[in-house]
Amino acid sequence: MLPQTAMNLKDEKLNRYFTILKIVLFCMPFLCIGYVGLGAGSMALDTGGVLAANPAMAVSFLAAMLQPYAAWIAILAERRLADGRTGWAVVNLALLLAAEAMLMSTVGVIGMALVLWKSTKVYGCGVGEAFRTCDKRAFVREAGGNLPLLALAGLCLFASLRLGIGIAG
Image 1 (cartoon, one colour):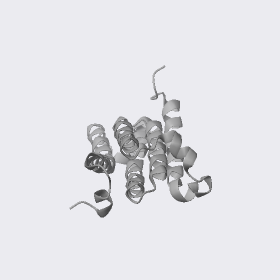
Image 2: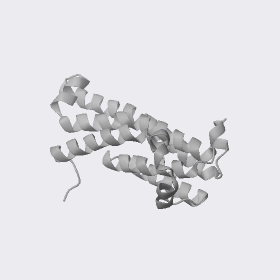
Image 3: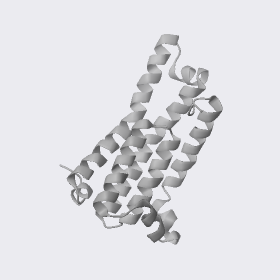
Image 4: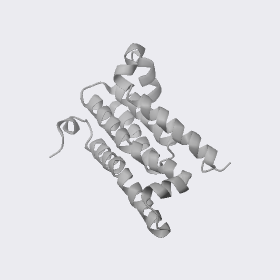
């Protein structure tokens, strides 16, 4: 049975997109741990040794560990859509999309963009309109959960660029 907040969404397809996104984001750390474990097996080191020996893998590991937190914020955005705070839901989803882009998570960017696009289409509230109409004094209360995620995503982006694993220019 679906959670109560999911039943209140206007569109069943949007509900399905949210569910898939939350599951995928929640599973990312486990996939990363498995991948790091494969690397550890071939080098006869433990997981910590692989992360210490390969800084790029350590950055990827940190980025994967942030994904369940992003899933939790997506749950909050879904609840805001269900209870009528559409503007704040769109603001949260837009900030999540920015964080996923900084984390260089292809799956996260595609999933978040799809959910954001479908939300704006179903609820008729664009991203620019959402940022303009939302009360700036309530930002920390309504969208402040994105701030630590954005800060850590920025750290991951900076480390990735310093290690040379960023976008090829």
